[in-house]
Image 1: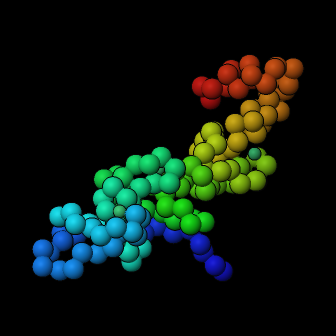
Image 2 (image 1 turned 45 degrees about the horizontal axis):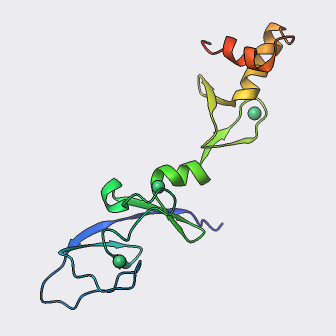
Length: 139
Ligand SMILES: [Zn+2]
Ligand SMILES: [Zn+2]
Ligand SMILES: [Zn+2]
């Protein structure tokens, strides 16, 4: 099974003054700063290793980056875009990580599925969907 998405470590290295400057994989210019980042077997300016989504400087955010489909992403965006929370215990379909979920014990539910379940149990289907989910919020 091929696993394309992966997290990679980011290393911050100090540049030795007597070594040849390395080329930045982001902007292709030489790195003449005192520090550079090493990630994905390439060297980067601290400014150039950025999340493709939110533009945050990955070297500052953490020591991990995520890649998928040639994008370099921070953990937050990666999970938001590609992550999966789990399977809905009601409809057993996957729940993408960016979707709001309801949790009950060890189970996760789509918001809609959770509301429906409650409705079925309590036989109060005449409620409107909005009112239903609101009225169950404390459960
Ligand atoms: Zn650069
Ligand atoms: Zn990001
Ligand atoms: Zn569901």
